[in-house]
Amino acid sequence: MYKYVARRLLLSIPVLILSSLIIFGLMRVMPGDALTALMGESGNVGPKELEKLRKDLGLDQPYYKQYLIWAWQMVSLNPGYSIFTNEPIEVALKKSIPVTLELAALAMILGLCIAIPVGVLSAIRQDQASDYTGRILAISGLSMPDFWLGTLVITFAAIWFRWMPPLGYASLWEHPWTNLQQFLLPAAVLGFRLSAATMRMTRSTLLEVLREDYVRTAWAKGLGERIIIYKHALKNALIPVITLVGGQFGTLLAGTVIVETIFALPGMGRLTVEAILFRDYPIVQTNVMLVAITLVTLNLLVDLTYAWLDPRIRYQ
Image (tube, rainbow, N blue to C red; front, side, top):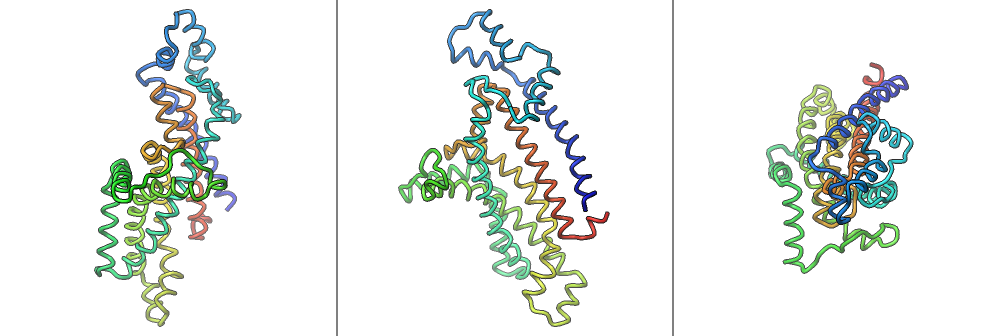
């Protein structure tokens, strides 16, 4: 098991290096210039001031030196300063990361609490009314984009119930009720798409497992339905579902960019959008790299969960 973990950790290193090269390169080929956007906010800036500013920010150095400096900043957990606000990126991340993590975690919890029970019910009640209802909900969730659903939820909540989510961000520990009002609707919007895909995968994999010989043997022995489903079939059926959920977390992080903007939540998604508009290279690079690290870590956890669910994997 330890060799399996070590091998997976070693494979993560070249993935992160390649991701950092792609992120750095894409930021440098984007049209526009960070200093040009900064000049638009600061007023008229002469060529000498512009050259001095470029030198202070390190943008006059060759690209490979800029990359090495940024890579060292990421490794040393000191991502530097924002070009536009001159604020330490660490300060901005401390404000935005809790918002995005809470939103993604709540969306995943809501999605899984809906998807797995409904998927199991659809599988064991195949071609019945409950199965058709679950499949319709799943197709609807996959068909509705987050920006459209979020706008629809806000609009009809205001028209029908005369209610809008509180603006800004209230801490869960200091103002739990206000925090719940701020996060419930955006988390439901994000979790709906997650629940749709997970529901379909749970139904399909459980149907395949229920047709296996060992499940038929369990039925022939006279075991109860709950024991067969939850003790024998569901554990094996969840292996592909875990893969999907691990990948869906990346979709959740990408969806926060839209949902946080619609619901005015000061998370990493909204911070990244504002940084892209102002060509704030350090913030965009740091945020996207953090997402890449998160996805690599999640994939590692998914692989370890495989080894826990299926002992044959850990010995390969």
